[in-house]
Length: 172
Image 1 (cartoon, rainbow, N blue to C red):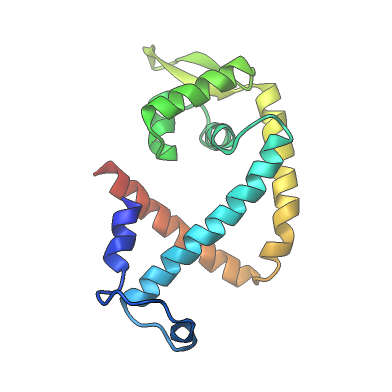
Image 2 (image 1 turned 135 degrees about the vertical axis):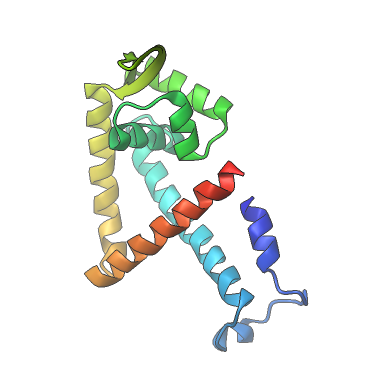
């Protein structure tokens, strides 16, 4: 889906990219394409940073993302976790299986529907999540210090708006 969005944003005149083009003001679809490129580039940088932190605690970034979502949302079904992370069902099943084996999450019966189960973080899962978050925040402090509080709030607002759009696109 994202690759289709990026393809739609590519200039209609496919020419070799000239570095001089970036010195002039961007217009229309060029702005959109540049924003997407920067989101991807910055996302990869942050993912690499997070991956280094997670590896120190025996996790990969997908497992960390799942624990993070479980902690942030409270008890959550595997189906909801899949929808919130925008992962394939089979990937979420593997992630949850690994987290259960590591005793970082547990499964409990949903109070309102005994046929349903919910994923809940364990004490050990919470401890590892906190250690990872503390290290990740420490490593990202320098990066975020380049923005004022107002710029951070605006960035957060815009990122949440994009996230809602990504979720809607994924549901189609």
